Amino acid sequence: MVDESIECVEIRNSTVVSRNNVQSMLSAGIEDLFVIDFDAIFRNKFNFKVYQDISKYFEITVLSLPLRIEDIMDSFVSGASEIVIPGRIEPNTLEDYMRTSDNLVMFYQSPVVAKAFYLLGGRSFFTDRDLDFPDIKVYSYSRIMSRKGYIRLMGFPREDLEGILI
Image (cartoon, rainbow, N blue to C red):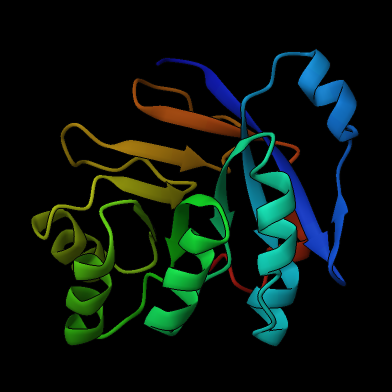
């Protein structure tokens, strides 16, 4: 899995924004997408219908940072294969999230919360850092990091998310 990558698409104002159109991605054999839902992240407006449409063609991992279990469940029902959850949450909330699904990706923001996530069975992370947990999958928005288990996010809009990537 060294030097594996996944294409990013964005949802802004309920519209998919991508460097490539769906047809060209399908023609290129792309099967997985990393979806950044700006409406959910910045306005708490989840684009469940858009997830449904995209997931007809691709396996999607959605970066939406849901704060409610209902939004996690609705995202899965709408076609998300994995959902990126916030990395600064209370232990009880984390336990509730983990009871919801094994297909959660932790946004690495706090070493303490990340360790709790790992100890509860979480094995997927979203970060630009080198993590020291065995047997994990990492969606990396680092431009330089590449190692076993790390998946490089191609076309990741880092500048547009600078405020939350702290």
